[in-house]
Image 1 (cartoon, one colour):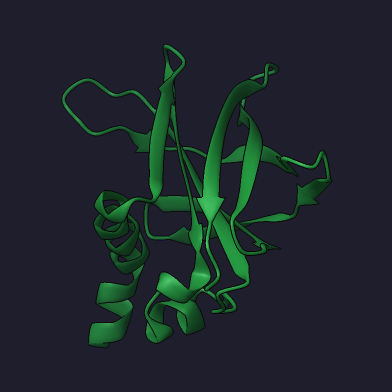
Image 2: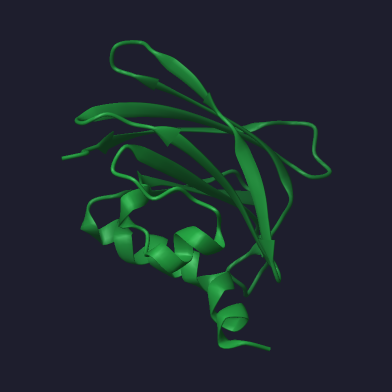
Length: 150
């Protein structure tokens, strides 16, 4: 097995954790049995090899959102679960967009990634809805993120 195959599953998560202290949003919301983690950032902050591996377009004018749904398991950081995801965003001018999400599975990790266009000094308010597999109810989280392209 190549070093790339060993390192890449956790590299995106590591990059998102490192970027968070630099002013990007990294948030989570507790729903009792589940915790939903969500993060939005400009794709130009991703290293080229990470963007290639995950088929993400690197650009100052593109953002991405990353969502993970974990089922709480005593004595562990949680178990990733498959979930139906719906994400929309609206800017301050009231222009909305639906963000297409795709599932990425690597080992036990499950991520949902979506890309979208951004303009300089644009603030987007995200509406995240997830329905964990085996449940009937959607869990909802909202957050805002500022994007700068210059």
